[in-house]
Image 1 (tube, rainbow, N blue to C red):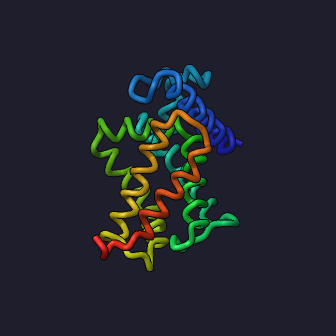
Image 2 (image 1 turned 90 degrees about the vertical axis):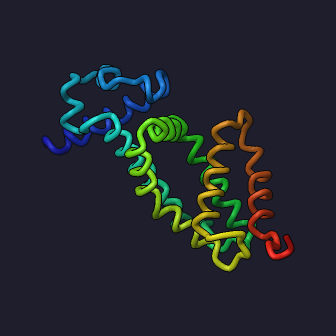
Length: 188
């Protein structure tokens, strides 16, 4: 019973943090804002998380777990010579980012001000980057697949973060990425 209650409290604190980040921004949110949003005593936070960065790292772990599920979902293709495989990934990341915009922005804010946290985020997301780089096998790339994978994710993340429109842009992004990935690099 205690373990269940502790797990429930941790979930409530994470959910409260997302609401507080949405309202105040990650950098302006204090632990007391999170606990007040959760209806908990300030001390309860430290039973579950060492600090605000640890809570954000737990949120990232949750996001990565969700991302792992999409990697085994029907429709997931791994050959980026196939436009449909590229579109699946663009659409999946588009939806993922839009659903979790608050946490994605919090991760970016925390990484900007804390190089140690930025390094931890890179470490935690490295397996996903290697997974994406594996999809680039067989393509004539302008560089190392890991570098190209990082470029693609950074480009996509930056675009989604600033795009004011809706989902209609997914096909345009897909065409852009597909053209970039299948271009004849040796001709340049």
